[in-house]
Image (cartoon, rainbow, N blue to C red; front, side):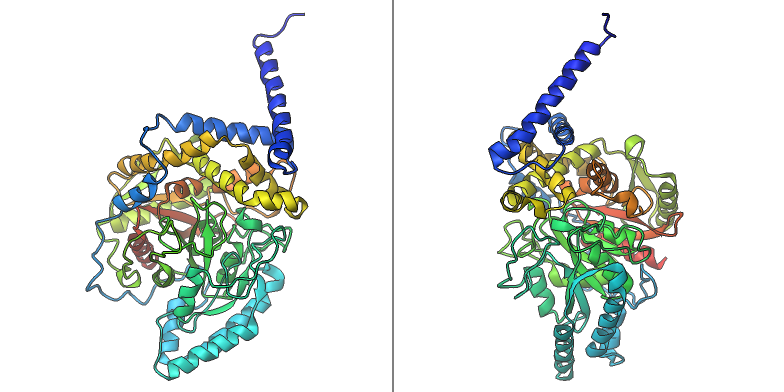
Length: 555
């Protein structure tokens, strides 16, 4: 019988694929003592994708390269052209909110200062709004009404004695349930890990407490901080505050929904591959993934310690700046923390973006956005050019490579952490989170080290290439209209990797680079849902990004 040309080679390739799939499924149990719950063919395909992408992208490694080069590069390549941070004017008081007509954090702080509102009144209003929205949005895992009211009354008593700790004094906040809070056992959106009551606050929570903030409770999230949609089979899905039929973004889904619904004024989330930016974008909010190491990760449950960043979601750039001011800075308890001074972010809002040069990331082929997102983004770029001058279009050939490198790091570090619970309690995981984590057990150590060793070099190449003549790079946040929850169901067989890739393909690359990225609302899609743009800066350029977003919001 005559074979079609190439049929023999194809048969061999398919046979080899079956062998690899069988090996991976068996080795999950034999090498790691972890039961495999992922279709062997899907597991093999994901392994091949990751392995091939990093092998092709790492390039020739210097024999002297090491992962420790990366944090040093962040400090060496920091944004140096912004204002010095002294003798700066106060920010304008008319920043436009990005989500609905709710009072902004800065506006609430001014009403507290003037005596027009009390912290007790603010807390009561926030709690009422949280309770009203909870049946529809499921933004909270726990609401701490009594504790919040006690904190608010204490804040009022301190104010009456003349002790005001700053603009967060008496402001109701709530945070993603991945931060340690004294006495509370963070769920991480899962029941796979035994509950462990915290013996101390996470450093960022401690700093917010010191600033006088009121904590309303803890917020829902994708299980084990792993997912971009808000889907959580364990505690129930978190729904979009603007349209509950659509995704809330993730994994800081409750943060986005709680802020957008008016239940809280701001929230801390965490971001490994887009988990602050995506919930902010789909809710019409501002969300900041800071420079890697700018905010302490101490006490923040990790997905991947080499990528994770904590950061704020809020209604305005000014509100983000206020929260960032409170939580940024070095922390000796966090080995990845950057030893860099903290500028006065709120005071720099009107000046830090002056003379900023803009670039626009060219996206085509598989990287292209949907036509309606591209049209909204193009209109935003035109507005930005009227304020800041011509934006040069730049390409970045390593965009997909950075995605793959970040994905490798995330999966390996997550599998290393979760192996203990996947071994002891495998059925407690949702299928999606288990399948996203299982490939990390099989990534060759060489691929992981290539991704970490090449990181400093690729960061330098990015700043010397696409950003060589730019201070801010503009790029859409979500490349498609906000999906319906039913269309982004990660529990549907074989769907998880496609859903995650489509939603995170423009956010994860910049997590690998570790650069500061602020998402801001720029318009709406054909369904009336928000469209966001990412503002990408050089290391430690948070002041510049916040200033740009503040000025664009006022224009």
